[in-house]
Image (cartoon, rainbow, N blue to C red; front, top):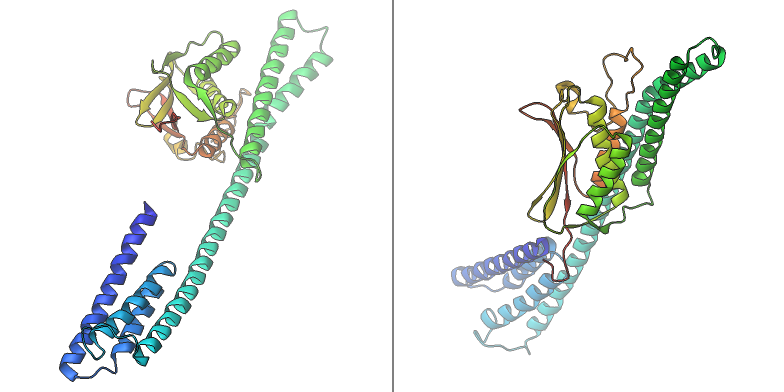
Length: 362
């Protein structure tokens, strides 16, 4: 579409410049009865066309057409072709040299500009990667401290006071160690996903994935971790095939569901909805909990925001890391993860993926 528009623009520009050159020469011939400026004006027109259009074609064609125009309308005998005139042959050679030289210079300049733009885009991408790495490292330095301290404290208590503590206290401390260890495992999985997405030589490999199978796998894994938390699902009845990295998209949906369990205080309803719009499948995880504080809503996917106070009860603070990983995964799939507070209460996270097409392109 862009090439077609550019081609139309170049053709229109070439016709306009050639028409102007022809009209100016015609007026000069009628008013001043001189023909000495005719070749120069056409050469200047060929120069402008070669300079402003893309490639060699327009300049060379305009040079050839200009030679015919000079020979036909501005060389005696008028309005008849006579290519045995030495001026016509010389004009043709000069115009072709101007056209090829200018087009060559123009192509080189455009290639250098494109190379410079690509280098700038590459530098911006590298800068974004470094910024993301820095944000993740800062988030990790804060988020790892609490569970590691909790594990160390609980295990130290068990070792030093094993005989003095009742059985219920033993189980409570072991349960806390288990929870913090599970959280650390999820964090490591998230960081490995970021390394996979952010690596310079690793691309997301998309394979056709059936939507029903994806959702079933997500719900099965989620129910094993949170058997008491019900998830209300709504998915299309039609067969939907989506190109994706199914392991990474599963992790995104699991992270979003887990974040609702951890952070949506007062939640009584957790929903996973997939709808179809044009050629895309829209995924939404929503709840009716406390919602997202407005002061962190615009920083939710950076992994860099700071919470106002450190939790005094030793609860985990993994929200920023998990969501920044989700955003990176969705971005690698050519989409964007967005979050918003619902008008009736609660939060909603949404992203879309392009639906696969059959062999007929439908």
